[in-house]
Image (cartoon, rainbow, N blue to C red):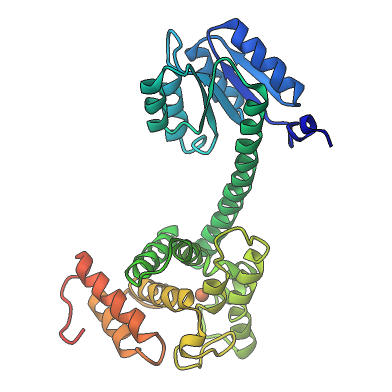
Length: 334
Ligand SMILES: [Fe+2]
């Protein structure tokens, strides 16, 4: 493989080039098309905004100073729109424009190329940014699919999606207070969002049965942590929510499921999600009972220390809940 082959596009991305100088656009077009990219051009800032919205390019190369809308403002708009905030932006600058480069950085610019262009360097930067873009596209779409599956589960189970976010947010807060790393915290956030994903495989006749469940039906419900873990297992690059999903129904005294793990054998992520999930379930109206008051639910958590839940996690959760001002009258002894 020659050095030039290594600069060739690894996928047929679309690149928007915006510059008011026709010569700059044509140099960039030749180089990028030669490397296998699709190029669209804009001679003004307004045209770049319009094409950006209609064509959704995979990467922007923007001149900073254009007569109408400047490249920094376009970058700011791209980076503040949830649909495009992960799309990379390269700015074209003159070496002397330090002030402009700082403005562009502050607006979220990913890279700079200076005139006159070093084409080889430009292609290396483009390729590297697009590699990351492709990966994040996959992750974002995986997360979106899992989230919509999880919402479906919650709706079938008579919860709203707010339950998922409350479990995730409160679990994250406990993890932060316990000094966990950002990576661990991210896996707990995802574990909170997807903890009941596996209920997608539980039939409606079981999930919605008004009477109590027989042994076979209960066995079906108890499969949901393993089913959920199987769904997320292939997504290894994805923050690792599997332990929280697989073990969120283990009990601290070893009588939970699926494995009957005990105490610290249960991954900490799962011990945290278990407390946040139980609290939210207790304080939400269910078809078969009204919601408990927050103070009563906190008391139940305290009563279940050592048996159902990790006492340390319960302490952190209760302290955090009381400190947040969400709770009202907190009984003595908590
Ligand atoms: Fe569950």
